[in-house]
Length: 605
Ligand code: M6R
Image (cartoon, rainbow, N blue to C red; front, side, top):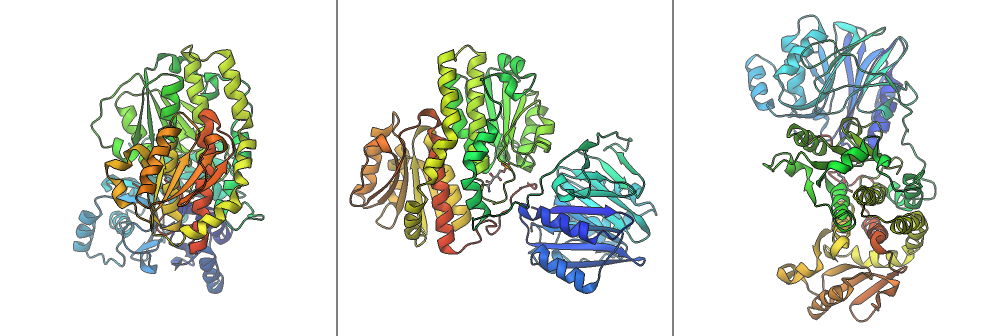
């Protein structure tokens, strides 16, 4: 999703801005641009292609400057076209980039048009540029503080002015923005990774902050205009520029990295204990009477799987809510609930807003399962478990999911332990199974050649159904999400027992029905559901545990996983579904790592 980089320095900052944009590419974007202060004027270059194309344009034009801003845009208001790409200018005096959505942009546009401003784009961002210009007092910092008071919605902005050549001003509300502190130079960016190699001295701006960057100083005020002290942290950000090695795509690489990612997530875990989640975890786990999980997309499905685990192992009631629904719903707050947010990026706008909503209702026992230690989610929760999946570049989440599941299983065990529901023998058995997970996942990865053969057939389909039961129902949901987001095949997942209540009407010979078939307590029930599909001519593609006694027959295609892996089985069963989606997308020739319309980090509502 949109990415921002800004700089004020005493050297040519063009390479820093472009390098920053490259490091933000993983978030997903459809246009990009850069603006610089050159010889007393604003100059810009924009592209609807990749950052590499923007770089060539900038090189050709010989653009260089000491003050500037740059942006990758993921279209919300207005198509991905050059005139909608940021930076936006106002009267050749103000240059501005923006991440977020301004909800009152129509009203402001009407007001500014009436005042004589001519709009070149359909964006909500251009409205802010003109607003800043219309309120400009000769002091950009002061002006931006006043201008943001007129904005409703979410924003992170970086702005500079033709008349103040050594100054960049930033502001944030609802979208992330960080300051990079240098020596005689200062920077702004959407995340620390954008500035890796330039500075590791990072300030995470808080909601409502406005920052004034000059060469020798930076100055921050909070939402009420009061000077704000913000901690400068040393952040060793990963560049994300991981080599692909033998893989064709990051998604494939990340699928194959799962054994290592799970092992890293479990590193140092020698016993089950609440302290794995933070110093205050014991006291919090002791007093809570329920769990509320908030997340989006794949992270939400990790949460649904965790519900099965926590209720079965710790006997604590769990609600799992889609963050974008929960944040606007009139729910019944329970201050004794443990609020768990799950997020790969830790910056997902809906999940952050849901967390804020929960806290505003006195639900203060907060824990996050997150892959980015420096993210807003981690900073805003009392407790955290950092998954060590490593940077995930592919838009389709894979290793983040299995490491989230790993952390959530540990959470279920820890909650059970605090309640006296985990014997030492059980703890030892679960830990042994967890330690063996990397090897077990490696065995599943070896199924790739068989999955490639299936993918060839799937690539010619336009619809697919996924079935699962119990804790494998969310795995079916995740399999369907993976297939739709990267292959663009319409896929739906159902709990297998629900089939006869409606979706069975869709089953014909043309409908592939992917079935997640672990050898658990529900296997006989599942086999009956499979019969219902076969009786209607549906083609079954079954991922069955070796001991589940399901064999291939007419219309029943089977790929065998190793023997049933008990409660951790969902972590194994999702892996072939990831590979099926990946190879189907590959066969269909889609842009696997950057599927259309999607962004890696969804920082707008
Ligand atoms: O960073 P998050 O885990 O909060 O992201 C949540 C979703 O946007 C994300 O899981 C999305 O559904 C993925 N594209 C799924 O592959």
